[in-house]
Image 1 (tube, rainbow, N blue to C red):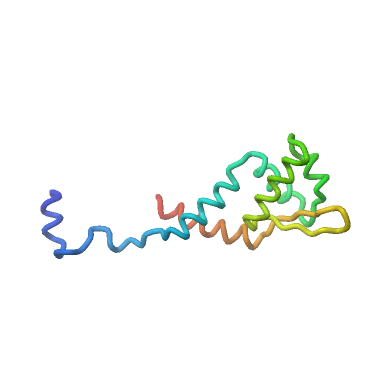
Image 2 (image 1 turned 180 degrees about the vertical axis):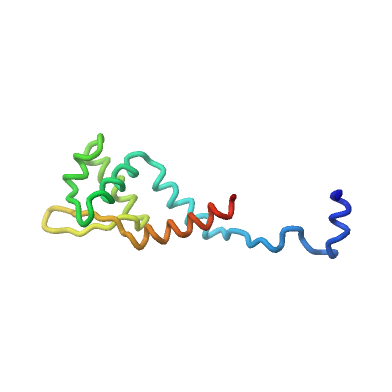
Length: 119
């Protein structure tokens, strides 16, 4: 079927791909921001370390788990917390970090839906 024949079969004024719902700007921005946060090797290492050590992990243990200095670790943890993927509790001068499993599961579901739609 040629492109012209296909156009003739559609009703005038209809689009060929109208049955596909577009990804909203808000959803695209949200997915992109979370992918950006996860797109750095140190943040991936920190997240992996936290996931491997269920419960709360002291920031001093996180600093020892990666090859960057404390200010850089704090910066990456701040970004993970801002994205909602990681949470923290403070006890005295120490901060204890943990994976926010609900937020991570919600992102996984959104990412899976997006990736399924691509292929």
